[in-house]
Image (cartoon, rainbow, N blue to C red; front, side):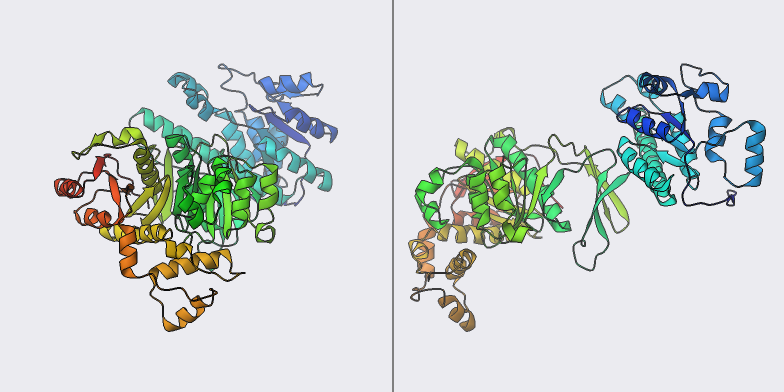
Length: 613
């Protein structure tokens, strides 16, 4: 068993004045200003190499570390600060008689603050540098000083980033030195940086050897607290960023919650991929980490305008962003109630006006016009959540998740679904128009961000039914199919002619139409439903529904995994499905293909499974 060291006692003080600082930085942003402040406070400055040169050029008095240690830098600069006078000055416990005696005998001066960055190892690797150059950019002296200073944080302050300079100066100005609370925060951040740095080196080196890293370290930076996690009793909760990387979103307005941000992450990826795959403005409407709707900017037919409560003239004037969201929201407007939406393009005034009249929790988009922001910031009494996506955000190739004490790691599903995935048409009927290709792409990308098992239907650039999270694939088809029927029957003349009383709210009209289509009222419910109308509507009979549904055609269905039996195709045939896209790979592929042939459907095998959990 390893020997465990006992604590070394000293004289503890909250505020420690800074009399000497060692500065050695590769990122020189703000260092002249910080060092100038320290000099104005009579802090003696020790430095090395390029940092010392820059500070002298700014007119500051600097002592070279080599003059302080009486040892020259050597071995191509590999040895600069690895010296007892440096590390003794950092590690000496103030007020400890033995330490004070030894420091005096060895000529070691106290160093109260270290300001450093580490060599840019990860940036060197990212540039594709040769193995030997990457090795040369592994910092040795920096991490050593970092750990020495952080370990002795009771007396010394470690500063590792330009974004800390302002806070340190304010503390010194207010207190005449650094406080213990600040030194602890700085030490914690320094150890996290050291762990992240060493993890990057270990992972890279192991990769060069063709092995997995022996230990993998993930370092996160807390960004902001959350009110709670999935449920109110799950506290504390917070959002963290990967060390050295920004968050994918900036909060412009409102206070996002745990589920809001999960929705935003999935919704944003979905619309980015739709835009990349189709070239059209895209929108999605999310609830509980699955899309209620998704769409691209395709013009509306007159009957759709009537069903979605927009005039043909107004629809024709809509911008692509507004048109995409109008379609996405109307895929399943009952389920979209209180959604979190994403728009692939700039949110303009038209889009904001549509959102203004809908019940929605928030939005993520790449940017907003001033007019749109002014409208959206008034929603929910100013609490509407507005997120702006980080431009050129890099989420990394590997993703991690902790569940019940286990950490799962996998390559991120960064495959962009597109036309290339639909070259393998396995049915004799190989007629696939561009509009059908667009709809199959839409449905498949939508399922990529839907909880599995999942099946989705698309028509005219919008999802018209999403069946998520079912254990049986045919149940996914039936669930999504019920939504398809409701979507299509909202265009039935009797539904369009429902005589609502003046003052009935938009969402109440949406819900009333859906219940009219479903028709399975309890006696109590019927009384409340009938109160919405100036006269009681005649029922929409089952025969009327089935007759109207016979006109449905040209719908595309996508599945996130293969159809194991023909039952899914049999059910889809009742809904007007003409095009089928699925991964294939089942032992029953021939049976499923025969089913498509029986109904005159065209089917593509993509070879790409899209499970999402």
